[in-house]
Length: 113
Image 1 (cartoon, rainbow, N blue to C red):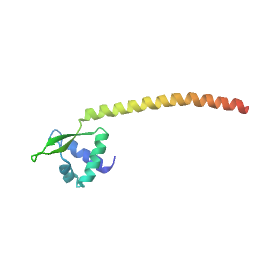
Image 2: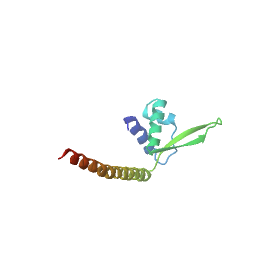
Image 3: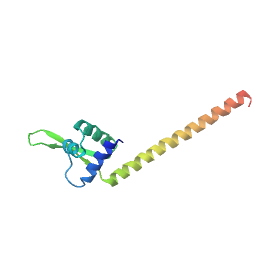
Image 4: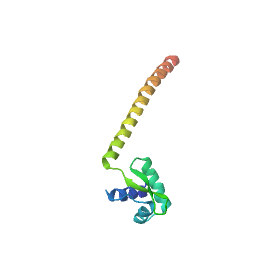
């Protein structure tokens, strides 16, 4: 995560239970361009730290508002990701170790070591 990502996330977290913020509002607080803030928000959404929802505007269209997900939700998501990575890594190590060991033993016996 970049400094901007952390700043945007902190801004949303600091907002607490207040109304979610628009890109323009976040942009004004962090003093970054809209496009920079939008990129940061997309990354934070992908990481599962931030969510967005569409709200109707007075002119009949809609805009997105963003909010930090509760810390307990973020902790749970991080634990799920760590556990998932652990299982994948464990399976990879177990399958690789077996095949590498067999191949190494076969090569050793063929070379006469």
